[in-house]
Amino acid sequence: MEGKIFEYLEKYDYENLFFFNDNQTGLKGVICVHDTTLGPATGGCRMWTYANEWDAIEDALRLGRGMTYKYAAAGIDLGGGKAVIIGDPKTQKSEALFRSFGRFINRLNGLYITGLDVGTTLRDMETMRLETPYVVTLPREFGGAGQISHYTALSVFQSMKACAKEKFGVDNLNGLRVAVQGIGSVGYNVVKYLVQEKAMITIADIDQDRVKEVSEEFGTNIETPDRIHALDVDIYSPCALGKVINDQSIEELKCQVVAGSANNQLAENKHGDYLEELGILYAPDYIANAGGTIFDTDRLKPGGFNEERGVQAVERVYETMTELIKISKDERIPTYRAADLLAERRIDSIGKAKQLRKEINISM
Ligand code: NAD
Image (cartoon, rainbow, N blue to C red; front, side, top):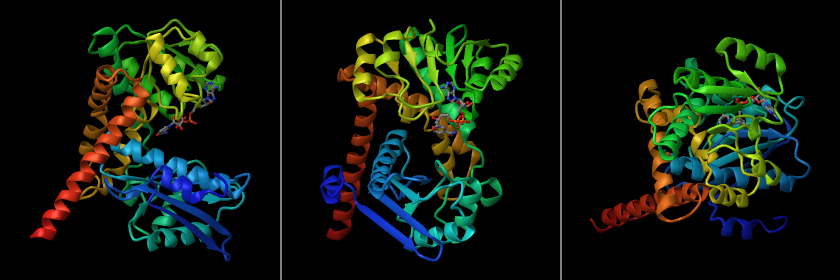
């Protein structure tokens, strides 16, 4: 996209792109506002050392657009946006820098709401919160949802159940064989849900101590990280890295369902098409892993954060998944495309309803 910003903005229908510079703190930041049809543009703040400025701009734009789809498909009334701070999160962070960025965000007056992402921490969110109310991903004592990985795991689990209903005609995962790749914050909690359902679990992680610990705690089987995807199981759950469904791995899959939390599981869209051809049901990553975000953004609803309402909203990922499986079957398209369609239709219909409301107000 180098040198062709407006062409890119036009192609994907972006609303705004903001640049922030502060010589005093060394802050160089970009905020993308993709689409605010459903609500304020919301998405995490990433801090990263980019090879060049174009890479940073492109990252903000690509991620911001992804957030629009994520919220829309999940039934959340928020738009998509993303912030990027150009800098090394290990060496270039300071209180002054995050406060400065918080002030910049505040100037947008609620058009963009920020949160946690790669390279930023809860502490950074707390710092920004001193300058602006437009921050999510906060500890409970700051009115936020606290740790959210547990809720991401819940949406992965609900996605697995919806897929199992479709594939195996069952209402629970009792006795199903599930391979979990990566047992970090999300994967560990996915294992916990699977244990409750009496699934037959195999885990893998590059951290061998962690594997031993979790296996001892839950009595799970263990596989090596390079073979976990190829196990003869019912469900393969990628909860570590992206691009795990690629030219090589896809030939080795023996599962019937792929449902996990990792972002960007498909190396390319063609792998989503291929999964469909193979008869493997894929729970689109941004649907399956939306739980944390759904729970986290509950605080933006009237009356502030409500735990019970947040959990119920996360559990509804089961229905979203069921709906997109139906779209996929009715329209004979792969599930990853059905998820996009679900999001686009919601934005479109709500956009039209808003327009109608505006017209009625004007005519009155
Ligand atoms: P985490 O860092 O806590 O855990 C990741 C785990 O994967 C670690 O234990 C790591 O050792 C392991 N791992 C790394 N490479 C591996 C490999 N090649 N094979 C097997 N294991 C490997 O991260 P997390 O918060 O649990 O997130 C997991 C994935 O879900 C990430 O892709 C993340 O972007 C995505 N995600 C997380 C959340 C959330 O709420 N935390 C929300 C949305 C998406």
